[in-house]
Image (cartoon, rainbow, N blue to C red; front, side, top):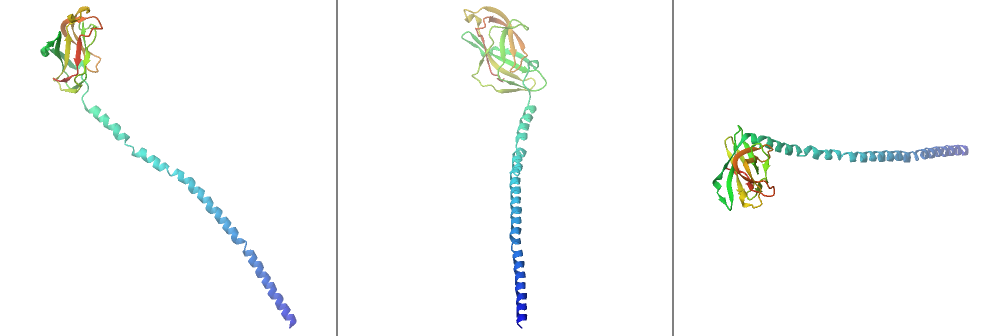
Length: 222
């Protein structure tokens, strides 16, 4: 009986020891699994962070795609190509109307430019005017100065229509120091044009460039 108890006790002790060994073998495996899981989670986080700076690239492209630059640049082009151009010397004729009268040795007249072309054109601003020796001759003395009392306006001339500007001529004899010469008429440059018209109208001029005999106003509808 005693030997059986001892033998039975050895069996229990052996079984207990085996169970203890099994428990001790399972215990360390759990922390190793957690350690592996944590690094995996953290390594994913940097990938998400590095992707987020690239995300603003889409908003940055949105303003350029929605920018209204194209409509704005297109609108003036249509307006500019749709209207008539400036009147040029080749499509104009010139005349004067001295009905403006005179005062203090000056003569006021209207300088009339008429559209002789087949299309409408625009007179805008001031003509260049000077006295000349002949149709092909150089200007004599000082050119006309601008009278800016009346603001410039766009004067639309259909074929056959006329725009006018006030031209004042001061008598050359009013200036004692005038070196007087004969002028055959007026050389007229339409606004913003390098070509000119010659209007025959004999008068006296001063060759002195420091004496101004002419004043020109802005064109207005006739």
